Image (cartoon, rainbow, N blue to C red; front, side, top):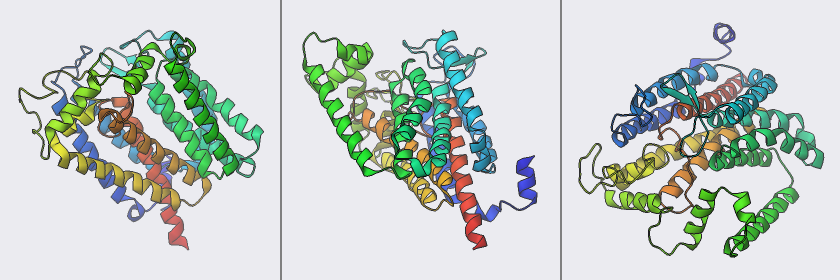
Length: 394
């Protein structure tokens, strides 16, 4: 009813809609559908009656509908409901941790719905954390550098982060942390805190590096999961030969290199295809970039990277032109999420970064991921829409 009333009152005008951002999003999403279709064989690994591609289409349809609805909701009204979003978010994450036994490769990150669908709460949590941090920082904008205010923010975000990292989902936790850090930075935190955090971070990295080099130490194993320890050790101290922990990244690099300039073509049946040889266990999600490189080649990679870069650039421009601090923080939080996930996913696929599972926005398979990124775009569109309306009144 609120949306209909806003349209009738001409609070939002169609000509103010950011169709440029929408165009980039739909282009890269269609490219994602094509790549996912090529990366999968039409049979869901969990025995579902829906194929991975069909689920991706469902996620796209639901995501687009949600995007349009959210883009017409005043983000200020969404921020008023932040306590509810926060409680629901923590409640769902707690329910997943304590009561759901659904397990995939040693991780409990999904809640099954019926016999054919699952949702991943950590994906939706990214949006909730963005709204929660925005509301908190905006409320204490004049005291953002006070230690008690920063401590309060840590206390607020600690429960969802703890529940996510216990799934375990280190990559999702890192995305949340990055969003929080960027929002606090844009809010105007003092450079004394910035340099202090950087110094503490470098010291922590140095300490972890020393621990990794010590024989028989156990502290490092207590901080990270066993498979994460193996991945880090192999990445930094590997002998250069393929091991159980590095084979996916090695084959990913081979696939990308094998695509050369033009690629081997979508749905190709080439006998020397890394994808067709089933050398990648998550080619439809975590290693989707390997499929892009092998089948679309260097040109295809550049086109998709350009579209993702344009979306990120557009998000930055929306943040710069937002009419208030709340809009600016929402836009930059969402944009930082897209940028971080893009950087890490491609970095892992090209073996620039240690192996960690992270989906590529708009490209990787996953219903919850699709819905969450389109909901995020809806928030961006709403922030931009209200800024444009403000400009028209001046």
